[in-house]
Structure formats: structure tokens, C-alpha cells
Image (cartoon, rainbow, N blue to C red):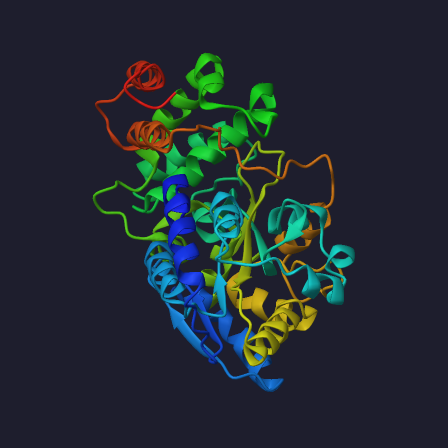
Length: 417
């Protein structure tokens, strides 16, 4: 998921102001997305429902969110933005709202009684300053452990209940020639494993329970020793970075038995289904062992661009209605691997992990935030994660050296405070 930097937001504010006076509205209803994998053909379920109700679908798909954002910015400056764009919640959403590239959609939410049918956590994620900006179609849990049951059975290994169990099982599997833990080359997927380790350690590190904990606080806490020691212990058990593929390649490796475990968000279930695997039989799912906190951090949602064209506004209203239709959310969830966001969606046709996620989504005892410490300087935060990712892959980097490097990054006065 990408994020618009604060500098970019300031730049956008200026160019959007210049474009306002000459904005030439397009009469075509156009949708932008950056879904490209097999499972993300789930968007076609939205399209079918949209067209069945009289909508005319024009769609552009981009290879990733960075490419999409460049085109979104270019067209917004030209005064001909798309009508709707896929966009994640978080800082980048707030910045798009601040510069006027997207508009609040409370009128759609009120007409559809969204606040009554959506879990509290979802409302929080799609809102900014009390107003709703995203129409959600599903949500995801990030730190799930996916297991190939046949591989474990073939080696007489019980499903791990703790991270120590996982590491012990991994050593047995590696000795047998099986890659214990599939780990893609994509940096964002490696961050997921790091966050899963932090989530595992949250039970004995109260500092990690706070949503606004800073990196500096983590670095000063003894928990950093445990984090680095665990990452180093996992190093020999994950796919070597020089042979790793992307996240869907790792899903195939697990499904076909070349690896035994995979830490990935629950959207990967769509990949397994596309490969003919049954969740709960061929592939087992659950939280990373030892983690007692669920994270609702990813919402599949769509933002709406400002327009004065009545035809486009009517199509936007139809799109919001379709996205929030419980039948559409269920149809979308099956190939996508998501959880329908509506409380009244019929989950009987979905697997137990989906049902558990929905059942817990309104429980105040469950943290809804990422285990992602705060850092005002984006480049400093990148350096922290690069160091931790290197601890997962570089045999020459031991835990004490990695910890010293983290502290040096924190104390680097050449960077922003």
C-alpha cells in the first residue's frame, strides 16, 4: 500500500487550486484500481452487479498504487479525474481529502445506514474528522499463518501453538528438505512477518499494546532484543531472498507443498481457492502462533472524486449502493479472500477464519491498530525496516549489531527530528 507524502500533499494542494477554475468534467464514469493478481478478479463481481442495475462500466487497472497515484494526480490537475478510485485508509487517504482530490460521502452512508450495519473498526478506518470517505466492500486481517496440512502430516508435525513451536517445526522441515516458511521478495510482505513477530511479543511487552507507540520507545525497550533475536532465529527458515518470488508465487509454493507455512494477510485465501485448495482441509488458517490480538488494518474500499456532472454523480451513487450490497460483498469475498464488512452478511458459505474475524470485529478487547510504531521522518522509518529485513536475510548481521544499527539510525542528527 502506498502513502502520499506530506510534501506531495502540499504540492497537490497548490496544483489542485490552479486546476479548479478550469476543471472540465468528464461525462464518462471511470473506475481506477491497482488489483492485478488472480484473486483480485473479484472486482468482476462488483462490475456484474453494477451493470445489472444499469451502470456503464469503464475501468483502468494499474500495476501498483504508485503508478495509479501518478495517473490520478495527472488527470486531477487536468480537470478530468476518474469518478471512483480504489484507495486504502490511512494517512494517504487523509491527505487526498485535505487537498480536495476526494470528497466525503456521508450522503451515501446516511442513505444506506452504514453506521448501523458496519463494525466500529471499519467505520473508524473509512472516516476522517468524523466524515466518511470510503465505500468499503470487504476487510482483511493482516498477520495470519497459513499451513499446508499435508506437509505437516507427512513429517509428523503438529500445528504450532507458539512461535517457538513454529521455529522448532521449521528446523525439522528444513532438515527434510522443505522450505519451512514461504517469504516473498516483496518488501511489504517481509514487513508483515516483522509485524507478526512484534504481535507475538506483545503479550510480554506492554509497550506494543499502545497504538501510538514510537520507534524511539521500542528501541529503548528490552523488547527490541527479543524482536531481533527472533528475526535472526527465523533467518534460516524462510525462503532465501535470491530465489524468492512475489506474494502470489509464495502462495503457490505453499499450496503445492514446497513450503509448509506462510505469514500473509487473509486476502491470500483467494489465491489458494484459485489453485483448487480448500481452506480448512488442504490449507489451515489461524493467527500467527502466540498472537492474541487481531488487526483490522486493510479495508478494500473506494474513494469518490468531486464532480458536478449529474450523470457521473448518479453513477457514483449506484457504485456506493453496489459496494454495500451484502450479496455483492459475499460474492466479492469468495474469490478475493476478504471478510464482508456488513454485520448482516450471510457468512455460512465462507470459511471459519472469515466467521471468526467478523465475530471479533466489534470486540473492544481486540486491538484494531497495526503493530507499526510511529515515526515522523519517513526515511528514518524506512531505514528501521530495512535493518530488520536484513536481519531476516543477511547471515553476517547478528542481533547485537542490528540493535546497534537501529539505535544509530534513531540518534542520527542529520535526519529530521
